[in-house]
Length: 178
Image 1 (tube, rainbow, N blue to C red):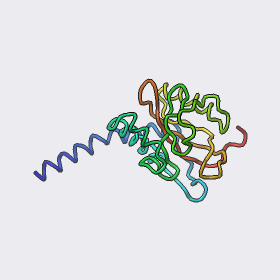
Image 2: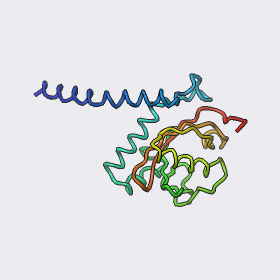
Image 3: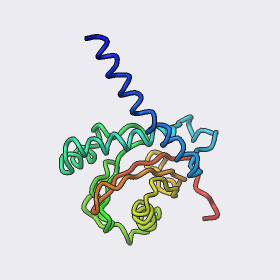
């Protein structure tokens, strides 16, 4: 019995190995590796942690359904808010489906919103996601740093033809020339 359990665990680990290798190669080939320097105040979230966080949200949707998942994603004290990481979700028309940090934006179409470049971000993310690109670098308002504009690496996954979810990590000051 114990040997069968060990064999089952080993098969599971070997099954995950190609996924881990694929994720590592895609991070390297996409040129999305973070700088070696940590963001202000010693905070640092790795790209791998970001991907795992988003993939756990994808699994949550598959296990619990869209409506229940969106309720959880919108909960500021829920499972999908961890420090600087939080799950947000949008439909491809630009309407916010989940945002635990800005709950007043849920149900709001933000494609034409200019503050912090949100509209441009959504247009770019919609296009990138539909082209199969999960990573995207943006400049976005950091709610944890007095709403200053900062560089952010986002990772997002298309859930179906109608919507996607993602998260991001702040990587430092925004590029002053952009």
